Image (tube, one colour):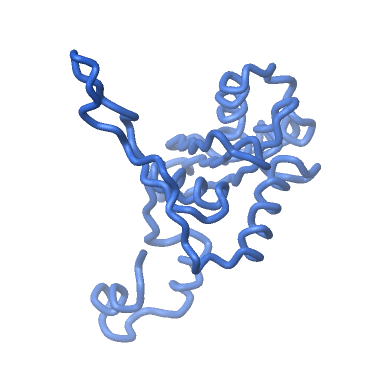
Amino acid sequence: MPDRAYLDRRFGKRGWTKGLMLNFSIGQGEILTTPVQLCAFTARVANGGRRIEPHVVKEIVGAGGETAFRADASAKPDPSIDRRALEIIRGALRGVVENERGTGRAAAIPNVAVAGKTGTAQNPHGEDHALFVAYAPAEDPTICLAIVMENAGHGGSMAAPIARRVLAAYFAEPEGPPAPSAVATAGRR
């Protein structure tokens, strides 16, 4: 995350405006985030603020049946997390998918409450990048995902439908038709 010291080094002491810091607060400017970082942050919100170390391999078992490696999947609590703020964020993420005017309605699937956030990363070299992060079930999450589509447009119309397909397969639920508001915005970029 760029901070004042970084900006002073890049632009010279006081050679930058406070507007740059405002841009950072909404994820614009020099904010760089990988899909794994997006997912790790979203999982932390989903599980009540506990930090989970991402891993690719759950365990490695040798030919003789002995466990050579087991990933630490335990969630580490963080007492500094503001519980009230966390619940407000969780409610807002659920609203992104469930509310009639939510930008992530295209990720909704029947019988499973999905919480998520759409994003559109501006790209000065081509079309914007579409992003969508989600977790489900919203009340007791078992999956978190991040969809990033380069040069694809808006997160709600491009990445959220991909999340719906992944979640429907994961929960063995029918995808169902996209939400009416998702159909109306699917052609917009």
